[in-house]
Image 1 (cartoon, helix red, strand yellow):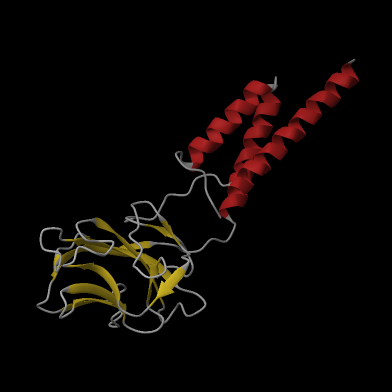
Image 2 (cartoon, one colour):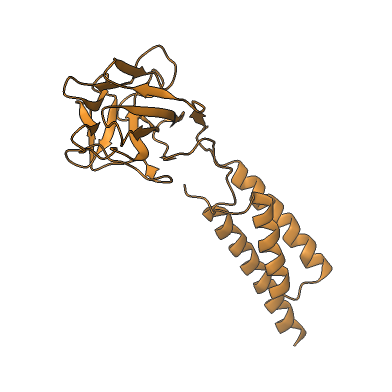
Length: 234
């Protein structure tokens, strides 16, 4: 479920209920009723089951990859290597999924170089076989550039068709294209939960769409009550 951005839950509730009070000429009793309804709405929203989502971040890294060897990454520290980034004999640096379930996002022939903030959940193509990041000929999406590699992988608590989604931040050296640097990675601990490229912490949820709809219905009920009272007085 998507959430509204920019305000906390309490701020959203206060803002919305204040606008309702302004739009309607509420009596003190009506205002108390609206406050109680708002509190009940928020409580009901909090009771909606949600995934125990959490972004797990590696912290800042400085892992240099060169023709001196390969670097294997265990993103979720479960003693199982997930991805390998290695320089080949042709001075080409490639990424490989360690097993068939460890995949990275491609665009049909090359690793996708994702910009910061890209929402990682689906890709036109997920690959496991070795795929180029950068090389001495100047080719490759990461040559002389810093971007994110979108990844997905399984774990003991998350098996196909469910995956953990994550990212690896990588810089391809422009002056010496047969080398590169891994500067960090992160993944979403819950199955099939999206993560944004570069995201290092779990988002703080705000009032969601269902909650807003419920508050609209409550405001409509109060408006109908006021209209009925006015008709009876008339």
